[in-house]
Amino acid sequence: MTPYLTVAALPLYVLHQPVVVAFAYGVVGLPASILVKYAAIVAASLAVALGPYEYLVRRTRITRSLFGMRPDPPTPPPS
Image 1 (cartoon, helix red, strand yellow):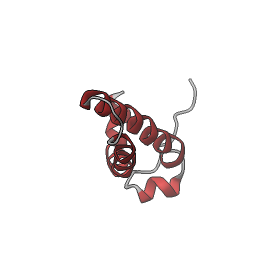
Image 2: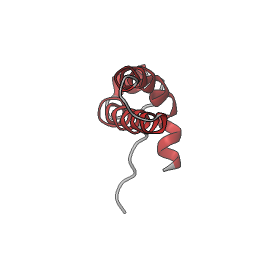
Image 3: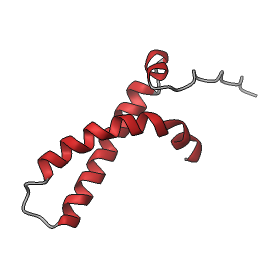
């Protein structure tokens, strides 16, 4: 899990900010305790930020380059 998150650090940092702001805008007005609001924002933003990273950024060369990631390393042949 650590190598995955190491490579994902910058793209997730860039992706999470607008997601957190959007969820917070919707959650702030709800009649719930601050802990419930915080948990909802964290869980929703993590799920929504990881989705685009995994399926849009990580898997294409163009988006990897735009998010400052190195190209995919060559896969070793099966042994």
